Image 1 (spheres, rainbow, N blue to C red):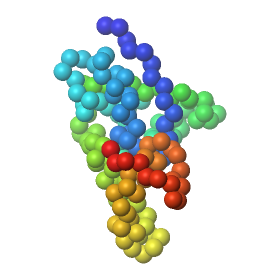
Image 2: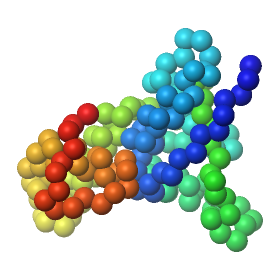
Image 3: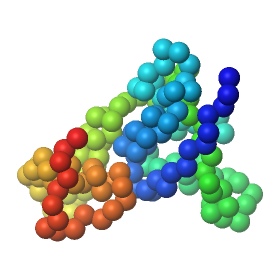
Length: 152
């Protein structure tokens, strides 16, 4: 088997892996074992499965902080391994929809702490929800009054 070419991406630190891995799946799926599915993809770093519930920046900090190097910047590019088999289901669960639910739950908690109620998040339109998820996936700020992307 010929190894696949490397894939390079600039991931936003505040995003979650399931929200930014669509292109990764498309790139590596042709090199995956027969019968592999996109939903079976998972990633690891130095043999450690990457948990989708933890933001990308926190994962990077946790997995590179014990190194004997002067700073995390020396660990760039962050080398991850993409897998399509032997998913450690006891450690890794979830999907993109689960990640979106996690984001919405975190927003409601933040709104409650700041406003005393989760109602501001509960009142968001589906287009506003789509704008928030798009901003998390692309690391672009949300500007008031800007048109919302179509929900995917």
